[in-house]
Length: 455
Ligand code: NI
Image (spheres, rainbow, N blue to C red):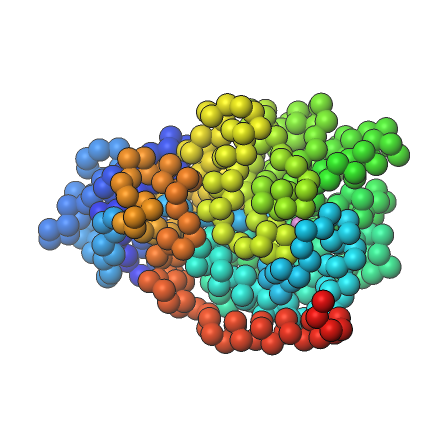
């Protein structure tokens, strides 16, 4: 950390006005961004900072960078925000393939998860973070168990995360899990210099009956935290809700008062008339997970209509067992293409709006609006540099189109969170890549062995 000037790149601010500075400069002082705009006059310092153009931020007289990063041929943008994942599921990457959700979950994933130790979860989360840091993700919303180990892993990586202990109300462990969730919030909410925040994570309406949800809601309001849940993911669960209660999942939750708390809802694929209006009115943030929804055969969320209705939509990868990677650039491209394909309108989810899903709206979804998600003075310096000088990205007529339709996670050259560089030019600066990969390989082999001979 310190005073860093990133100069001469194409700066995609992802702010409300969608400003792009080509070329532009970004100045970082400690944890925060202090300047974004046209290149600063550097000869002899930057006293005239902010004097010209639509720049924002003014630097103290005589501000001099301790480090200058030349960003010519690079895109500079806010770090991407993964609004729904189960990081430790990297251990189960490729473990259960080509199955429908309920079979995938109940016959493969749940039994495998029952064999995971807390140490497994720690190492699996470290691996997920290597992958996220490497592909330009700077914050993620995680729901899993063994979350104290996840928090420890986040503390070490330098990433930003919103953590929720997943809660299954129909399990005999439901009460104990809720106690664990509460203690996670007490120990970790606001920890690691504010990088870690906590939520409560009731898994889904079909695994958490109303009486249990009420207990979770009561705890959340006592603790002053929001909720992270899976909603309307499969057609079957939605039909079941309609059949047994006469209402949609979302209508039921509205009636329960669930949406009076801040809610991050993963999926929302199968919505009924009226659901969108409830989500918009209640300020529910939807985490759209296009790859996972396709892979598990669940369909395509009506993202264009949700946005039209005024709903905050963020992007997620879901766990690595249903994706199978954690590269948000893939989700960006897929999200945009799917909306065009399903609506027949090539103008649906245009590139600038797609970028806002992974940045500004992602920040809103994680309760971090005004903190991260755009490049602007006063925001935390969570940003990435993407190499745009490869054959795939040459030329850059339109920087936003380059990010959404052409860039891959591998094009990320530098990842910074709160002013601290976590990855640069192939090197991880907070995590030991070799050791983490070795540990995960060893643990994955043990998990396969416990199941019996390889199939
Ligand atoms: Ni999920």
